[in-house]
Image 1 (spheres, rainbow, N blue to C red):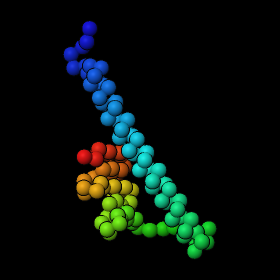
Image 2: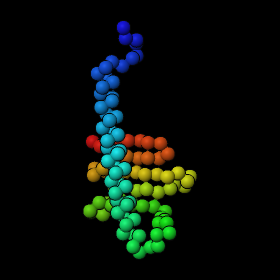
Image 3: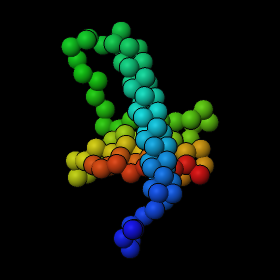
Image 4: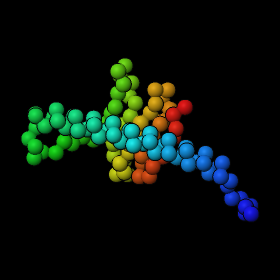
Length: 105
């Protein structure tokens, strides 16, 4: 017998499916960031000594039209922030201290 307030199997399946989609989207973003970071490190490694770190206060991700779609920075409180926006301008992923994934609409 089901306890009051306990979600049924259909509700759990729906929630699990949504979480799995969000997890796949997050891993795809992490993979793209890793590939782009490694690629940019390879390009800049030819110009800089391998012993010197690459440093910046902010990284901005722009689309082909020059519209900013994401940013990676350290805020005034010293917290790392990663924000990625979809083509519609809505926040798709924000990673401030914790993880917030907003599904693209």
